[in-house]
Length: 414
Image 1 (cartoon, helix red, strand yellow):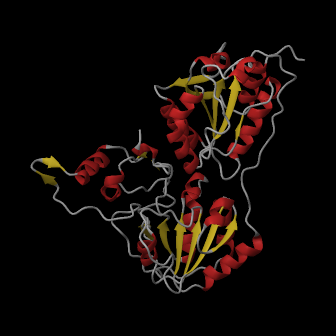
Image 2: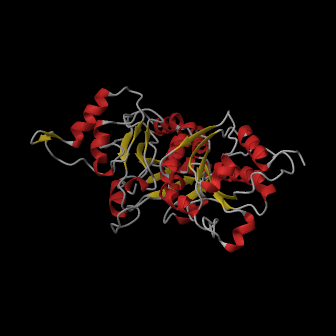
Image 3: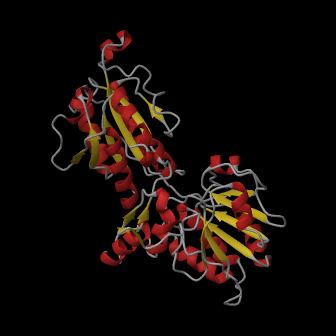
């Protein structure tokens, strides 16, 4: 015994992991966790549990480190689910915590009991757990951290009975380092590099994992070395490439037939850091145009398994870019015939309408005015799917970490 409580040891673990900012909307079953809240921690309280998860999602993405979210037991966790879904799709590492009733009463299922706490947040968490005894709480947080940051990163959930925090700890929590980048199979990647070098008209389809890994320089370098047309993967939540670059064609459509038609004329395409593909709505057609071979690099085994076409390899997007840059043969500048779309990352063109109707500004005019009135380094958060083409026409994204949107679409629900 150390003379310290489970709360003391857990807060020290979080301190050593650098997780000293929390977001939440707590209730009575969380009070024991927050009692004697340390002065070196920061708690950001929101008015709704979904807002707490959303704020933590943005914080974690911007800082490239996990965040702690503290919500109320079952009802509060249920309120948070829409943005937990989005955090999962965004690949954002979050440790979501909720209290549960006192262990001595759990069998009777009193008021405020989360009856099946590990089941409730599924399938939108990577791991869901309620420690079998109070002494396991600190180690459960360490495991939650490790799972949250390992690729593909994402949210995890811990349910903690409210009486656990004041129990005596067995000893200090053990802090471990966790590597988070997966190198691709060198033989497979070498074959990919050879295929890219031999292709007559290759296409690079970049995904949000490049942005999450701070890989814009590598993405630009590979495109320029190959002189290849660059597309953003459909519904990319983070721009993987500067929209102002001359090799950038724009975002791919969000449906099977239109996407296939967009890639016509290319003999080889490689998707890096995105699924193959995100589709909505259903528009029937061939997955790929005739004569196109597809290659795929992802750090998510699930993405690789469910891809309907293409040859996949598991690997970190930016490490893979580095390896490809070292192996592909350079092409003459200007050898790519890029058909740029004015609507950039958006999958479809802007609506054709006047700048104003009956004295009212159009959405395009509004976005143009906003872009003209804001600094060059403004960070844009987009939740305007109906006007996405107008937004990207007026506001091309040409700086890393300057645009975020919602892969799980929960912004449509809150």
